[in-house]
Image (tube, rainbow, N blue to C red):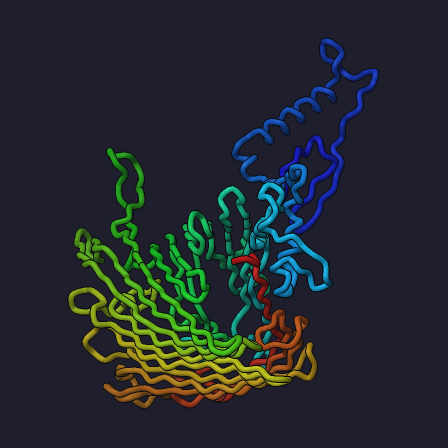
Amino acid sequence: MNSIVNPCCHPGHDVHRGTRRGACSTGGASASSTRFAGGRSWASARNLVCALLGAALCASPAVANGQPQPAPATPTPPPGQAPADAAAPAAAEPAKDPAQDVGVASAGTVEIPAAAVAPSQQPVQKEEPSTPPPPAESGFFFGGVGRAVAATDGELGPGRDADIVWRGSRLDESTYVQLDLERQDYWESTGATTRVAVRLVVDAPVLHYNNARPWNINMSLRNAFVEERDLGTKGLSVWIGSRLYRGDNSELLDFWPLDWLNTLGGGVRYELPSKRTYVAAHAGISRPLSPYYLQSVDRAPALNQPGMTTVNVLDRQRLITSLKASHTVPVGEKGGVKGVLYGELHQMPSGTRETAEAGVVERLPRDSGYVIGAQVSPFTGVNNGHLHLFLRYAGDLAAHGEFGSPSQPAPDGTATGAHELMFTMSANYETGPLGLMASGYVRSFRNASETFDFADLDEGILVVRPHYYLADWGGIAVEGSYQAQRRGRVPAPADPAAPGAHPAASHHSGSMVRFGLVPFLNAAGKGDFKRPQFRFIWLVSRRDEGAKALYPRDDVFSQRTWEHFIGLNVEWNIKASPAF
């Protein structure tokens, strides 16, 4: 741990993970210097004040408790007694010949048995304590995740995400920057470790597409929490604040299929000493800017004051609680199988909303929802080999996600009856110069309305990306994917002869096939997950007529069967805190 020193009385101070040097000026006195009564200069007074401040800091119990404790001095043994650490080499000696037990040495010399020596003359056999693990590293840490993308289509227009499903390939995603700043401290007085984590996220568009004055930026605060570990009980951790709370992800599709929450609240987790089993619980709130949660209207101020003021007629938030249990069964020397059980409960209070008719309000009832899910993940423990299988079912309000709201509720005004079922697979395998990543999901969603409408859909995608490493620092990858969706009833068009028109009460289906060529450079070495990674990307996509009909008229995606995405891409992933 870093020691606290007096900056005024020390020529410089060390900062964790870096050193800063600089001498404090003492300001030498001159003949014209102003002096105190009694002949003391301002410089001497300043030095005295610094010394007093330093002594006060060292005397403060809170500061003193935070300092590393010095190692205890080795006591001097009494006369005729061996030092305490002299017994340590004896404990490491090999087993002696049985003849030595009766006082006869193997070399023919005679030894006196230990039992014949007076207890006061026997050396003290001190048991060596097991070496404790080193404390967690303390200091400030910086990290982050992001990507920068510069791309064009086949006609020098801007490169766009062309997926028709909810989560598609991440190769054509836009620029995204996530900045993590963390402060970690190990407290020797309690044996606990704390982490303060702040995560700032900046999303597209960047300045080059958004340079109108005044400048604008899409920014959000994803993390702002404090977590402590091992306070009172080893393996116990508690956190409070705003946290992006999630588990294993589907790498190629860039989402978390089982648990993916961002709430303002707190949580607790307990990990068994075996490090193979843990249980975690969490509760948090959120209130999206949606008419389902918030309605602000203008009203006259209190006591007939002039002007108007804003009143939240509807103001309700969603409470989300979650429970997760994970256990790993070891297989072989490094492999194993991890199993996860997961659940969520969503609750929202009732509220009152003003209608378009002046003075008329409607009552919004209480609403709730739930999520149940499971995960099975066999892994090799070598070269990132793993297979994640996720199954997730969300009912009622939870079927619309943590920030969603039911646009087509049930007759009673709630989301009762809405449901979502999703099965997801994600895998990686590496051997020699070859690497193979694959991911996909099948999803079915139904809203709470009684009719089978356009919002009801079934969709799925399968993505496969093999890598071939020409050297440890780079190679070439190809990516192939197929994605499709099938929606509910489509309203009859005003003009049945219009392009893309469908008869009433029919289903609509669309699909897209994609192939990509991706040469890459890995400065961190061979590995499918090594970052940062530089890429040149060329994607070719083919839409069928059903996929083209999913876009509005005059959108170029509604007109093109073939789509190109050509660009440069870099992704990085730098973990901030090494111990968490």
